[in-house]
Image (tube, rainbow, N blue to C red; front, side, top):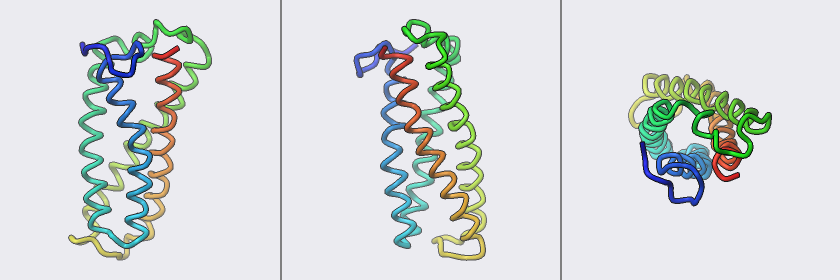
Length: 157
């Protein structure tokens, strides 16, 4: 569906964009966490909502592309690791964190937009937001980091 990617592997262009985006999320999420810790809640909110919208569009397009090609196992069938426990482990491990991250992150964003005033200031929901924000951040970091072995084993080797 998409032309050859730019990273020099078997992956298509969209897969290369997604892998770069997921790896870029790691420092962005850490930076955004620092904004919240410094009390810059307005920028934290803006970056979180912007990142969520951007990732929703990229991941939605990625999922559509993946389904049009028969799924992740069809797309990685040319890998020397296709059908092995190594690739299967990384696919399932990454997918678990990717899916649960969506629910954690989307739920926290919706709840936060409803419970915090605009511009955002600390309030009764802050402790819950902080707890789920940390969980969501860890899950997002794991999702970003685990995308690399899926890509390498699935498309580079």
